[in-house]
Length: 117
Image (cartoon, rainbow, N blue to C red):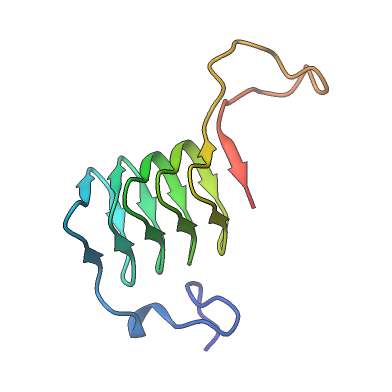
């Protein structure tokens, strides 16, 4: 199948199981697709099919594309992660709190969003 939500050799969205929320999961104001497994906290985010958020992980104001894994105790805030990304335990992906302009390209707009892919 050559669908939008079908990674190479992956499972089409319509064949994925329903969303699974584990005991410690907390979800608020988010759009979560089929096949996701949520054991941590997700807030104000969009999760594409097959995303896994492990226990103790926190995802806030983020977009996580297909089959991304957010391991235990990770923090993801103001970020866009491409498909098949794997964040190791205790990793942090977030915007910078510092008001530092882009030194290499000072004329570029600084949106303070982390993009990984």
